[in-house]
Image (cartoon, rainbow, N blue to C red; front, side):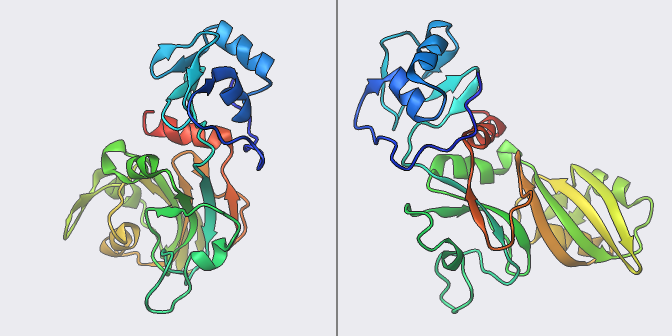
Length: 256
């Protein structure tokens, strides 16, 4: 059984120390306590790498729990948020130059103090993740975990047929080579084109610098996905909590 898509209820209990495993699973939205007991009985739950058994107690703040092989976040103090960052907004919670910043959009909609996972430059827009889970944030940003980021870009056209092959093979920049994991032309708009590209690079302005180098400067850049999390229909300037299933997918993306 996969954890359902419901976020923990606002009045879910805050655990202090060890609690019965089925109680913790139920509070995380896996199912009723009886259903969680059944999962434990059927050996579908592991705690810290070992198969759990009925009667086990866990500490939600420290225990690593998997259900059917998927990591379950049971510490309800941790929050995971997706935002559609507007163009012109600085990726910062407090900008010393007085520019529009993330805190203006988050306001009091998230009680916990959260931090952005990676950056989008002020002229770029789209998906940004925010969390107070420092361990997961570090893994999502570290290049060794190779978490893909997908972008939709409007660029100066026309696009030659061999551009995809060139980008997949790699392009040398001043700070080293870069290559995309995928590239396709979505649409052509007169002297401009709309392209989609995915890469696991995280260097500053990497997409803009890459497309500039191959002769197709970016005029608009939107990040549409980070690993398994997609921007979808989230409106500009809005935020939403990630579902339990999305958080599990992020853990899976970094091998947890």
